[in-house]
View 1 (spheres, rainbow, N blue to C red):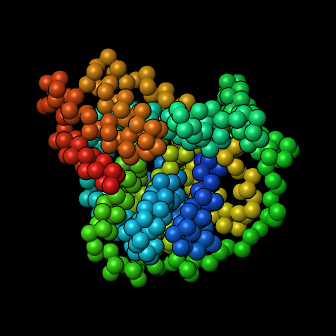
View 2 (spheres, rainbow, N blue to C red):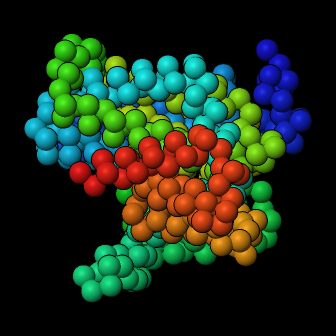
Length: 434
């Protein structure tokens, strides 16, 4: 197979080397999920080793489908936020067994697949106005930058002001700041792959100064999937309750709009949007739905597209080959997990912050002088980091869009699907409040 021809590398202005660096950069930016997801789901009673393997394998499957079938530089893995909802709300809060919760994830994935095959999901995404898509991209940029600031301790919680600057003399925080400075300098010098090389330099300096420990070993046995594999099927009869209906709807709401926002933002950043539409959107959404089904069967919470994919795009990733390389690294992670201990939040934070800066560039294209556009765009952007949720930002901003447009006498310009979406978003916010 001619790789360059299959992935259209020449047409997209990229190379195999660039795609490799992009795939590795994306992997390093989201590798934290391999270490965050298992203990979180273990709190719900699941086997930590099995969840580790399920996390890696679901990422491999979903990302390969995205790369080979949809041909987008977007990686997938169990989503942050949804895993917390799964463990702390559904299992520990509602008292639902984790096996039944997995069944709920499976059902949501099947529903997503049906909606995707029918073309409904693609039509909804392509109906979203261009300005709101720009707002989603900028909002996600602020959101992931905030994650970087928070994870590194540059921004911390404060009882009086909600947030405040952290202690810059604290080792991991100082290392993250160093990494941020190095990355900024590399990019300012227009060094290709500056984000990736910034992460490498930060990790090396962290090891030298003792802020990052050297791995104790290179290889590790792959944990067995037996404790979780297939549990979603055996517990399927238990989902037929009103409470589980609410759980499934929440999985649907959050994953649907998180995925839509992520795909649009990453594609916009990569210059892959055409006439305000996402080419091959149906295939990209199918990859996401497939990953959710596979993840549930293996034994993990909802698998979704990752905003960290923008880090790979930031170093030049433009094709599905980026995703293929990312998937291969997740596969290798099954055998070399001890080596990932050097990829700490101090190492990934600078990349997230810089990509946030890059994604915020779409702010200049929003029609701020048009009040009916400015209000929903601003709310979409600001709510994401404040509510710590991409889906909530989209819900609030998109709910206001038909309201402001109608108030300006432009009701006829609103697509019927946008009216329907506004109702769905209101329902989403109600479910979220509960």
